[in-house]
Amino acid sequence: AQSVTQLGSHVSVSEGALVLLRCNYSSSVPPYLFWYVQYPNQGLQLLLKYTTGATLVKGINGFEAEFKKSETSFHLTKPSAHMSDAAEYFCAVSANSGGYQKVTFGIGTKLQVIP
Amino acid sequence: DGGITQSPKYLFRKEGQNVTLSCEQNLNHDAMYWYRQDPGQGLRLIYYSQIVNDFQKGDIAEGYSVSREKKESFPLTVTSAQKNPTAFYLCASSPGQGLTEAFFGQGTRLTVV
Image 1 (cartoon, rainbow over the protein chains, first blue to last red):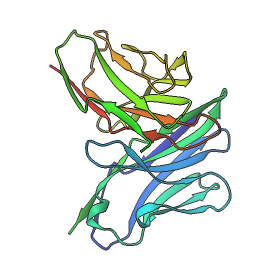
Image 2 (cartoon, rainbow over the protein chains, first blue to last red):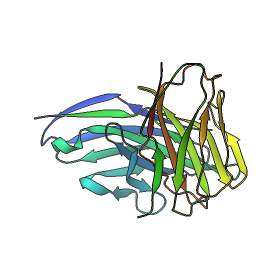
Image 3 (spheres, rainbow over the protein chains, first blue to last red):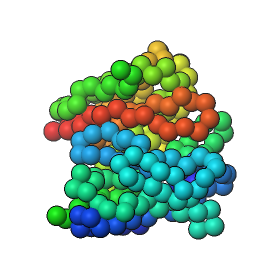
């Protein structure tokens, strides 16, 4: 079984401030981890992913995330928030389950950027 | 350009009517998925298909049906048995081999009145 917990359904930051969106996961097998971004009334777009190797992964739009196995976490960060970062962010875990790639999404975190 | 196309973007139907949502991909992906999105609940898997002519129920399949007659197409029918069909529906695909990211369509917002 696998699950994803995103702490904080709504996060507000000031423009220029650090963005930190939290994600914890559970998985019985080594997982692949993803962060997606969704703008209103649109589909999800991949921000970044962790598969194997380097635990700090960089994505698009200046975002990065660090895989910490001991903490079962994959938090998303960006040093300086921009107004265009306002969106909903989803953490996801993917693992093999009976030969099928099972993807489980968190409930999402809405990021508000205050000017 | 390769991608996933969902149509229509907005759909209105009367209660009790079946409605079919279209999903087409030209990425040559084997696996396709349908998710339902409701505020505060994230994405919930309705059905998935790993190969043509084969599909499996996801976590919330009741009241929905699918077909996979072609690799490129994975239509979703919302039947009158679905108690609360108003939602945002997302179709996705992935290569199906190994663990990879999913590619999403732009979604269809279904409103049942």
